[in-house]
Image (cartoon, rainbow, N blue to C red; front, side, top):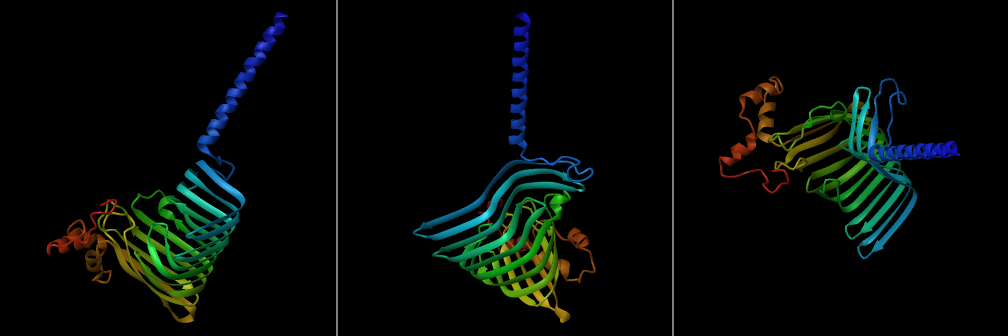
Length: 325
C-alpha cells in the first residue's frame, strides 16, 4: 500500500513537471512567435523570430456610413511585428510586415475613389523587403493620403506583374542613416497626374523589365541629407516629378526633381535627386563630378549651407514645428 501511495505521488509530481514544461513552452511561443532554426532554411542560416503575428483568412467586410463605403475581401490578410534574426549574410529585422493575398478592396467617399486588388502584396516597415507585389492593381482618383500622411490630388493607376523593393541598408546592417535600396520589376505599367503636399508627378510607362537603385542618407540627425535614384527600363514611357517632402521630420524638406527619359530601342532611364541642402548639392555638382564630394564637403562649412546662407538675409528654410526639428 505504501508503495502504491509513493508511486501515485511520483506520478503526480511527474505530471506537475510536464504541465510546467508545457506552460513554459507556451510562454516562449507567445514571446517569440514563429522561429526558423538553423538547418531548417539552409546551412548556417541562424534564427529568425517574431514577437507577434496576426492574420485572418477567408474574410469579407463591408462598411457603409454617411461618409461613404468600403468593401474588402480576400483569402489572407495579416501582419508580423518585431521580426529579428539572421539568414546567411543578411540580418533580418523588421518593425512590422503587412501582407495580403487574393484580395480586392474598394473605397468610395467624398474625397474620391480608391480600388486595389492582387494575388499577393507585402509591405515592410524597417524591413529588408519594403515592397513585394505579384499581379496587383491600384487605382485612385480624387484626393488620397499616403503611408506618411501626405495628401495628393489627381489620378493614379498602376499594374505590377512582379515587383520588389529591397532595403539593403537594413539587410546589411549599415548605419541607420544610410539609404541603399534596390527595385526590380517585370511586366509593370503606371500612369499618374497628381500633386500634393509632398510633390507632383506626371507621366506614364509600360515596362517589360525595370531596375533602379537609391543611395544616400536620411536621418533627423543630419541637416544635409541627400539621395539619388538611378534606374533603367525596357519599354515606352516618360515622366517628370517634383519632390518637397520632409521624410525624416527634421524641418528640412528633401527638395528635388526627377524624370523618366525615353531612349532609342525602347530603353529608358530615370533619375531622381532629393536634397535637404540645395546649395551644397549644386556646389558639389558644378564640377561635373571631377572632384569627389568628400573633398568639397571638407572645404565647405558643416551643417546646412543653404540654411546658413538664407540666415544671412534674415530668413530660414527650416520648419521649427517639425516633429524632429
